[in-house]
Length: 145
Length: 145
Image (cartoon, rainbow over all chains, first blue to last red; front, side):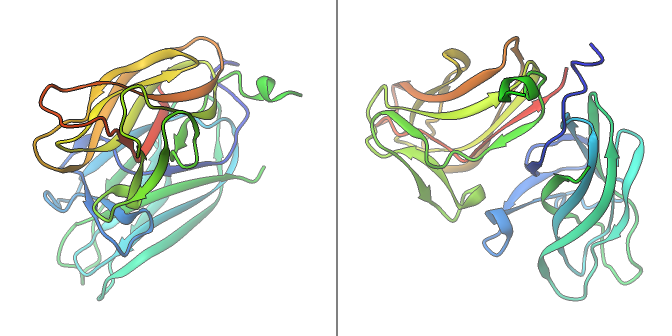
C-alpha cells in the first residue's frame, strides 16, 4: 500500500474553489478582472484563523509552488500547510490598493508520497490592514526534481 | 516505461472541459462572465443523449469528485462516467432561475483500474425544465484514499 500511495509526481494546476471548511465562510465570488474569473474568499466571515482544507495526492518529488491571489486593503496574512508543515508562512496579502492576480512563488517544496492535506489558513494581518479577508484563485505545483 | 506504468497510482487531477470529442450532438465552451473560468462546456444542440468525451488518465484510488456548473430553467440531467461506469447519475441541472457556480460533490468514487475516458451524457430532464442543455465549467478529482 505504501507504494500505491507514492505515485510518480507530476505538475498539477489546482483551482481553489471547493474546500472543506474548518473555520469561517468560504465561497466563490465572481471577479471579471481575475485569472479564472473568480476568487475563493472568506469575505463573509473575515476572521483571523479562518481556514479550509483540500485533499492532495500528487506524487513524491520537489515542486515549485505558484499561488495566485489578490491583495487589498482589508486582507490578512496567509499560511499554507501540507499536513502540519508550513510551506508558505504568513504571506502578507495587504496592499493599500487592489492588486489583482498576484503570484507568490515558493521554490523547492519537497512532497513525499501518500495522502496529504492542504491547509489554507488566515494567520494575522498587517498593522495597516482593516480586516482578515483572503481572496485566492489557484495553486500550481510544478515538479522540478 | 508506458503511460500506464506511471499512472497506475492516482493523483489529483483538475480538468477544464474544453475541446472534447463529441459522440452525439454539438459541444463547445460557451463564454459567460457570471461563471467561474468565464464559461462552461455546453451541448449547443440541446438534445437528449448528447454526449462528449475527454481523454483522462486517472489512476486507481478513492477520489472526491467536485464539479462546478450552472443551473437554469432549460437544463437537462447529466450522467458523468469513467470508461462507461457512471460516477454521477442524472445530475439535475434545472432550476427556475439562473444559478451560477453550483457545486456538486461526490465523496467516495472508487477507481480500481486506471481509466482513460471521461464522458458527459445528457440523460433526461426535470419535468419542469424546458430543454436539454447541460454544462460543466470544471471537474476536480481529489484523491482521498
